[in-house]
Amino acid sequence: MPTPLGHTLTGLAVWAVARKPVSIKDAMTRENAGWAALCVLAANLPDADFIYFAGGTVHVSGKYHHGITHSIGFAAAMAAMTGLWAWGRKIVSNRPEAAFAPNPALAAMVMAIGALIHITLDFLNVDSNPENGIGMPFFWPFSGEYMHIPILGGVDRTKPLSFQTVIYAAKEAVIFGTALALALVYARGKASAPARPAREEATLVAEEVTE
Image 1 (cartoon, rainbow, N blue to C red):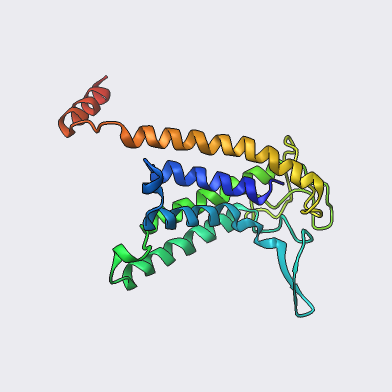
Image 2: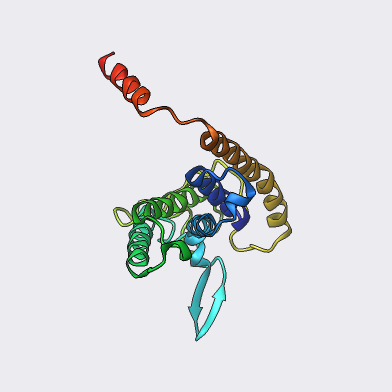
């Protein structure tokens, strides 16, 4: 499995493409900070199954990791809940400029994309712990079958604080950090590109349709 560092960096890459910050100052605005937090949450939320309750105590372990939180059904449910939350924020917020009240449809889409990227990355990693099934129920609730395609190396989910994890996290910092940097470059280029006049844009679309 990837570490929280890798998932966080992919979440920030989604944020960079979605928000297109053109400067550090722009990235640190209240609204952009809210979107960044939402993207990071989405990219890490499936790993909530590391936390479970037993004997009246909270435990953090990989015992139940790769359960239904690593499925398209969970991603869809979280997207729907996020959309409803954002809708509620817009209703109760009397001062939208002073509170993070995102567009409900976009918030739901960001949550879905972040969660699905997380699940896909885990799906492509090695899983050697049979305690609660090898792989994950990717297509739950349509199918409860555990599956994965182990083409990428990862860390042992039963030893999240091992030296192996530290080494893997360093590799992730390079790989996913590069992906984030490329996303920021792309976003800045798109944001700073001069907008086409509406008439020119309409002419181009008409030409494409007639060809």
